[in-house]
Image (tube, rainbow, N blue to C red):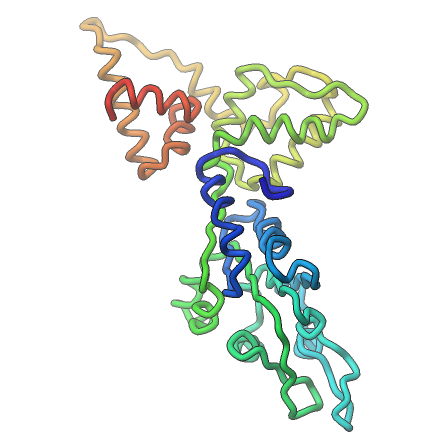
Length: 307
């Protein structure tokens, strides 16, 4: 298991199996995924597993770049004699890895220069006509759909293709149902301190398994910290959860009336499984979440029905 990346779902395990191979290459990598899914952890893993691990990993948050002198911040500056008086962050990463986080926010005014840097490892410092050469590996991350931004002319198409030589898609937590309880227990222990660890009854577990987690892992970590602070050692029940975490509980309390003619339970189960798989586009973890069961239970019932 790669340090800091927790999970055992098939979606995550497939990603983790490919990381060491990608890390050993020099190809540019574009990590895409929703906010809070752990894209920065993936970037750190790529660096720590690479041949450049003993050199710097320089993170550049493109959403927080200074509006003034952005080129100086990135590339650096020379004096009138051509001597480097300020090494920009790109030069500071010599021999290592540059991680462009939130790369969709990179101003268009510097995208052309960043593209040349990616293509030739060259950059021009302010105040000097001589090009500086830097040996770095490029990793970028975005929670936006860069393809759509490129199609709309809001992000350079050539830069997009240069960044995504190797694309990595980090799955959202709602598609990693098998990992949710494990993560809750892990971070529950981490935040418990000297108190007893927070537990969850079956009804609360069902709520948390069917909740969409729009903030993904980051939201789950904050949730675990809040539970540890407010309910130390308690067995959490649905009433202890936020209202938005309980829509499936309300639906689960609905009374379904058996028709006088009766039903064929096995056929109903088969129909529901097929509908869930169709709605989830074949994603079994997502289908299991729609049905309010674990992925293992879904696989068992699929096998029972020879699906």
